[in-house]
Image (cartoon, rainbow, N blue to C red):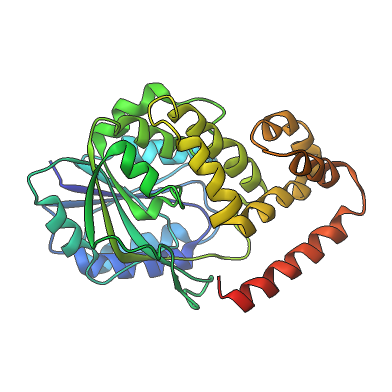
Amino acid sequence: MKIISIAIPTFNRAEHLRENLENILPQIYDKQEEIELLINDNASTDNTSEIVMNIKDGYNFPILYTKHPNNIGICENFNDVVDKTQGKYVFLMGDDDLLSPNFFDIILNILSQNEDFGIIHFNRLSGDSFCSNNRLHDNIYDGMQNIYDAPNFIKRIVSSPNFMSSMIFLKECWEQGATKIKDNYYGYDFFARICWGALDKKCLYYYMPLVIMRNPPIRTWSKMWSLYCLVGMSNIFFDLDQKISGIYDIWQNRMRHSKYYDFWEILSGVIIDRKFYRTKRKEINKHLKSVFEKCLLWIFLYLKPVELIKVLYLLCLKIFRLISRK
């Protein structure tokens, strides 16, 4: 059995994927006994296939490359690539993120400890689409490397738990969590499945940043972001609260206080497709805490001048971030 399976779902990001692979393969080309690499192409229309084949031949590293004839959706593509892995641990990695040059040496050293960790989570740098202007995501230092039981670990990473490229998980957890998935976990089935499956495991948090997260201005799933975060992630923590008391309130507090500027941006994102989000209004309202938030949602969904409000809001948000450097 391999120790780690790198599973990369991709769609129409050929150049970012090329840069990603050219960063990964020099680290693992001599570790074929320990590491496998899988790429699931969700029916890309760019030159992804050509880039993968050229890199595969250039590094002489076996890559299990699958291209779906039709786009099967984000969640199904994630599930498919992870289900095909053969490693003890799985690294479900974004196609546009970049790893530190010593990533696999550090991770393999951690995995050599006599402990099966359900989840390993590491800090990251967050930048723009060019991997510039990077900032440290988690500024709360409480030790370089800490081991927690799963409930306390999930509370520790709740500041931003949904970035998949900052997690490595035990394949066993993926399999055990499958029965807990619900349709209303919109976009974050993978995260819910890992958390539910890891509840009886020890988990590890590594403080040093090991990956750079790109933040391009437009993503293929951007119009669904409000649904994914406000409803999907909130439903996950609402359900997990039965096992991890208080986690739902911690998540709600995180959105409105530690990352409050993101919360208002996500809420205003319903403007992108108001017809669709009107059908989801009740689901969103369930997780809004005040009359003001619910009134604001109604304004975003039904008032015509709202496009101007959105533009003004985003302008104010950019000015705030420039001033505060957040």
